[in-house]
Amino acid sequence: MKLKQKINQYISDALANAAINVEQVNVVEAGKPEFGDYQFNGIMPLAKKLRRNPREIAAEVAEQIDTGGVIRKAEVAGPGFINLWLDDIWLGEETGRILSDPRIGVEKKPDPVKVVIDYSGPNMAKQMHVGHLRSTIIGDTLSNLLTFLGDEVIRQNHIGDWGTQFGMLIAYLEEIGEDTGSENLKDLEQFYKDAKGRFDEDAAFADKAREYVVKIQSGDPHCLVLWKRFIDISLGHCEEIYEKLNVSLAREDVRAESFYNEKLPKVVEALDKKGKLQMSEGAKCVFLEDEEIPVIIQKGDGGYLYATTDLAALWFRSEVLGAKRISYVVDARQAGHFKQVFRVARESGLVGEDVLLEHIAFGTMMDKGGRPFKTREGGTVKLADLLDEAVVRAKEAIKAKDAYDPAALENLARIVGIGAVKYADLSINRESNYIFDWEKMLSLEGNTSLYQQYAYARIMSIFRKYDGEIRGRIVIGNEIEHRLSLLLLRFDDLLERAAKDAAPHQITSYLYDVTTLFMRFYEQNPILKEEVGEETRQSRLALSALTANVIRQGLSILGIGVVERL
Image (cartoon, rainbow, N blue to C red; front, side, top):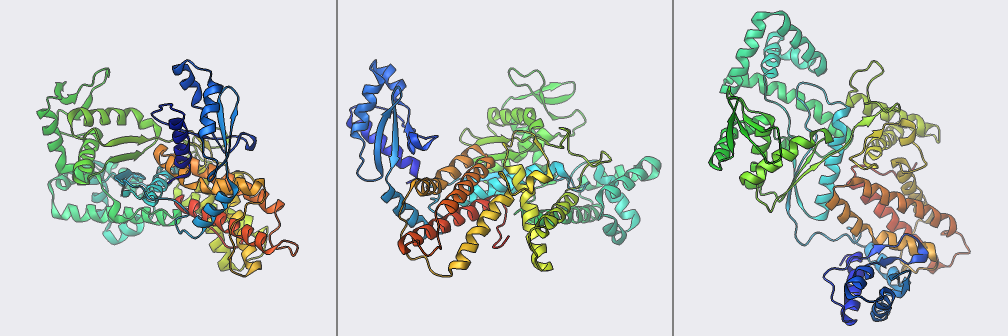
């Protein structure tokens, strides 16, 4: 049973013993140690309902709370709050128990579901740029988190591989030769510009490109071979980025626009049968109540729009894949689009009411001037260049602190640099815009990846010096040990809340609290000094080991590595 759930049960039992009927109890984490470890503040609405003095009710409930085991003390405070302190012996036993647990006490969900998470979504005609970063790492973190908690996560990389530009691109690939094209495609931006130049300047080439669009859509073998070749090379670029980012997207996770092409007429047919379609200026549309602009499903010339493809994807993910939670990690500017598509899917019955549909929106990466992040020349920053620069900057920061052999330095710089970029993004509320700042993200101070990695490395240095087994139990001897133990036990509750809210920043905030408290514990509680008794030493070593386990697992969910030395 999760810690918060356990405390809620104690309050529920006390309310029942006091003959007070409450449907649901929810304790909160106390903000300060003097207010206890948890606080029940649900007495006030009860008092209003029962027309009684809230402190009197709180006193009656507090008297019924079992303080012989998990809870050491229950105290009435303020207008009717109940503050709760957990027992140190019980805390020591519980932290000792989860130390030997490879899952650190995090229970798998008793009712796991299939979850589809749609993220990254690069354009096949261009290299990945900074605009793809947030979707990629937020989506991957949520996939890691839900998988760790026990859900069956289906990652989906919805790439744009269907459209008029592909006729132009494959015509150009054919013209310059596949071997030459493969070399030129190393710079997708330039390849696209060259193809567009040919399209604009040569009418015969433009006609051929338009002809190839039709041939692709009709399944022409030759054009499909070129098209698949182009997609394969483009995906290769993406996979290099995913590997650098330590992101788990693979080729089999790709579900391209073209996959849904044959399903689009079925969407139109399904909407028509439900009586949802209306003709408007030659187009088939769905008009939603309270919405002025209709959702266009099929244009007058027979073409389809993004909404049609998204409806086909929703139907496929719900009916074929069996997902009960479908999440789209897409920037906040698409909120209106997803609101409409979700409504059409619900109201038409394409997706059942038992399926959670959510747009996991995120803000924009900004420069220090508060403008969208660009190159000095005002162009789009390629993601590969950004990540390479992160490694270079990390290498310089590490070299300034200590001497490493070249191989070790390269490995450290990669883990630290990439981790810094990811953590800086994930550490803010995803719906907010954030300022991209190299100095801040590579700082040893504040809520940064490097601070987490440094704390982990410090714990590893303790064990290198000790060079022995941890064989004792955890004995809570002071307030800071009490608080650190309690915080580590809250890891399970924290992950559950972050998963429900789709909020990676809750994990980074928690990890920052853990490392900050551990540093205080480390400074105030000697571990290896001779004057420390063996029982105390073993207890503090165990708390240090558990802290390292939580940091390592938390960073792993974020897709960030740890280092043994730093």
